[in-house]
Amino acid sequence: MRALTVETGRNGSVRTTEVPEPDVETGDLLVEGLALGVCGTDKEIARGEYGSAPPGREPLVLGHESLGRVRHAPDGCGFSPGDLVVGVVRRPDPVPCGACARGEFDMCRNGRYTERGIKDLDGYGSELWRVEPDYAVALDPALEQVGVLMEPTTIVAKAWEQVERVGARAWFEPRRVLVTGAGPIELLAAMLGVQRGLDVHVLDRVTEGPKPGLVTDLGATYHHDPADEVAARLEPDVVIEATGAGQVVFDTMAHTAAYGVMCLTGVSTAGRHLSVDAGGVNRELVLENDVVLGSVNANLRHYRQAADALAKADRDWLGRLITRRVPLSRAAEAFTSDSGDVKVVITIDNGNG
Image (cartoon, rainbow, N blue to C red):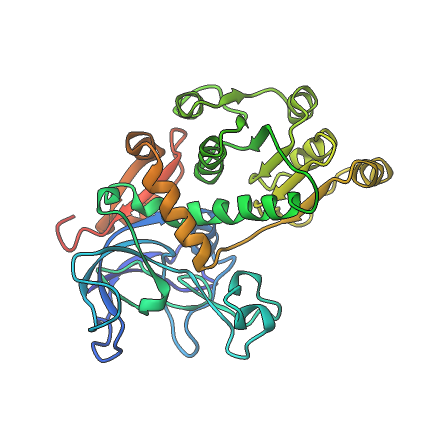
């Protein structure tokens, strides 16, 4: 069968190649791949900056943003042939740490977790793949065209959960939200904010292309002024930050409302230096009871939250997030950037692409 593979640590090695079909004796679900989302992590792996293949072999089958249809399901597993499913990315460490032992593997303490298509496990970028029933999540069949957005939605479902848990330490009725960036993660974060009935604002640099219209049609407000100016005007109660841009992070952090909660989901590039008024930042955080927290990955609870959020969303709007679809036979094209891209998806065309 065909799969999207990469030799980890080697730039430019992404290929569509033939690999063995998955072992039929595992007892897992056998899933026909339908689509695969491409994100920044995949591009880092493709550039050789990150990622590790299963121990003792190369290449790595790429792909952690999955969507597939069950072809075979063991008796009594809770799934049936024809079910639309996604596979969970992370697996708990084998020790396990206290968090992994309690199902909170997104909070692993010792770093021994594994991740499909990223760290020590093959991903979902193949015509057929296997997944344990306990790490598969069913989707509404009506989401077939957009269900590949499930995994990025889990990231922001967790971010919102973390914000609300932090806020619950005292009275918390947020009204205004600022989402920094307008990529797929950020737009999905904004969608979850709108679903919560909040006044949502999205900040990005671009003024052309699909992003401003996607924000407006969501019922949110789009901004493209400098981050410090926008944040100072809005004084948001909640900030979801996904750009990883250090200047945006600190400019926004300085202008939240009292008792503001800022959740960082973007990973910054190391080695970039800023001049920051550390004393001023400390003063604001302490005197206003503000919180800045980081959030990464997701556990099974967040996958279920994401499935519910997608089921409630406008499917036409979700479809507009996917601005380019590339067949598996030309998958390398998905790793090049286009100015009009929001989300690029590889279709697992099963030999017809």
